[in-house]
Length: 80
Image (tube, rainbow, N blue to C red):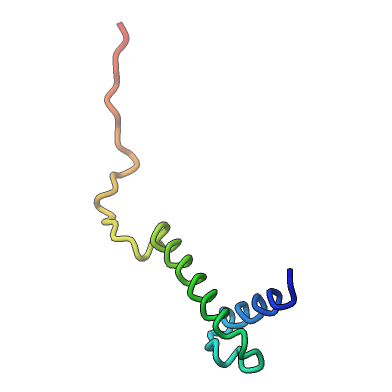
């Protein structure tokens, strides 16, 4: 991994952990700002795709009454 790549990862981690803007985090590495913005956009896009595929239970619109109760009795089949 190149030195720039390592620094890019560090900056991205700082942004994601602190909720600081890319401009603030990249103040000392302004030349990396376009790359950071692009990668951050990719990370957020992937995160949204994951959220769309696997929504949290709180965000699902599942009606609790639509789920059948667990103690449903299945019909029995008699042997001859």
